[in-house]
Length: 103
Image 1: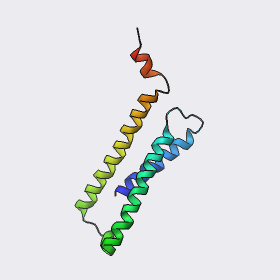
Image 2 (image 1 turned 135 degrees about the vertical axis):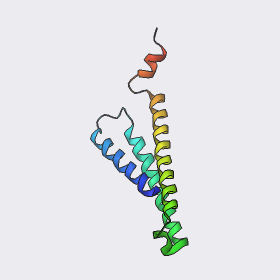
Image 3 (image 1 turned 180 degrees about the horizontal axis):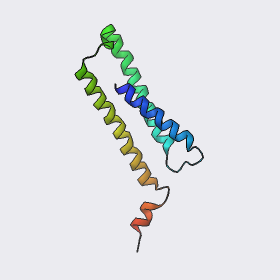
């Protein structure tokens, strides 16, 4: 479930990035790359886990699937938080700078 969650997030961000390609202000490429990196990490984890468990890998317990789904959502949320921090630091539209130096 972690692999599926992060892969779906990566696909959605890639589609959004591709539609907004000329407009690089919102750093959607960075968010997309973070999610693709997480997907690659979970894919490698799944390969090694399948190597250890064999056929049992494809019949997880429902509680394990729920825990993995929550972990996947946590990874997606952490990626969004990091992306928001990057946006606040870069401040592409000058909103934070205007709010801080408003007189």
